[in-house]
Amino acid sequence: MLRFLTAGESHGPELVAVIEGAPAGFEIDVARINHDLARRQKGYGRGGRMAIERDEVRVVSGIRFGRTMASPVTFIVENRDFKNWEKRMSADPSDRGEAKAVTRPRPGHADLAGVLKYNLDDIRDVLERASARETTARVAIGAFAKQLVAPFGVNLLGYVVSIGATQAQVPADITIDQLARVTEESPVRVADVEAERAIIAEIDECKKSGDSLGGIVEVVAAGLPAGLGSHVQWDRKLDGRLGHALMSLQAVKGVEFGMGFGAARVRGSQLHDEIGYDSASRRFTRHSNNSGGTEGGMTTGEPLRVRVAFKPLSTLMRPLRSADIKTKAEAAGTIERSDVCAIPAAAVIAEAVVAYEVANAFLEKFGGDSLAEITRNYTGYLEQVRNY
Image (cartoon, rainbow, N blue to C red):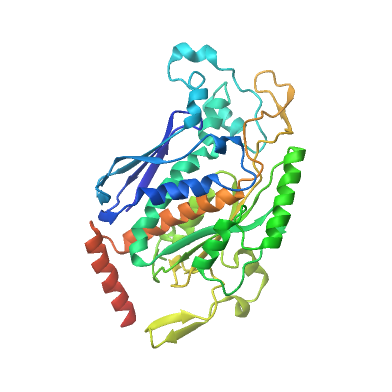
């Protein structure tokens, strides 16, 4: 079983990710992890900090000569902007006077609830950890997790479905590899040129007016065998675990699988994925994938499809009304350096979160202490299913 912890503040010296439970013998390419970190930093509508940071992991433990050793894996990502915040984010009490307290909470952020919960007098003690900068560590974890399932033919991709009022179309017959090439070339990570133009225009408009934009991303995981997850307990259902993990991301307000909420508006005969059997490959098939690749908390063998709704960012250059936590007087919300739109990055982040949960479920199903043992278990299970 995999588990992880992240640590670090937005403007602290570094972010830390610790992953425990990875079996031995998996080849890990650090360049591929750094590639996903670079993908997270791209996208039209990002703010000034992306010009400062060049996120790369430094491996501290768990990998030797490019392979996992079964011991905890630790990654560190340096915050280059820390040099501008060293006194304000210092652990030394003698530097306390160097920082001005933040007292005007932003509507939509963790600011007010956090200071009330923890009895704090400076919102920075909340906003630093609540910041989406933490997702840098999560992307590193997800990029690592993708390399645990890649040897078994599992492929994952996150891309943008809509930003603001603009819906992007995806060609019906496009493969996941083709979709990856097209969306990675798009500055807003869509597969629709007309939608791309409209989205860029809306981002430009929001930037001029001091506003922000949200959107919806989709993550597809192809190559999964049937049977990951379980129906027998609530906390073993894979879609439940994915929903929990995705809802833990900053700014997420909704998660749906397959038809999602649309499933409530059609009849059962229009929804449920009819079953067939392919004698050539000796496997059960589906004539549709409206369920998004899960039934009863388990994978069906069809591609997993999950959509995630991200609200607009809560830092506005033309801030909303708020109240000062010290004086209680009406005041504008604090302005922190931020993005107009981070949805292209959100697609990469959601991809990483799905990758981690899929890898965890995969290792639970085909458990073993090494790649060789897991491969034997996986091969045996596929043969069992073919002989059913």
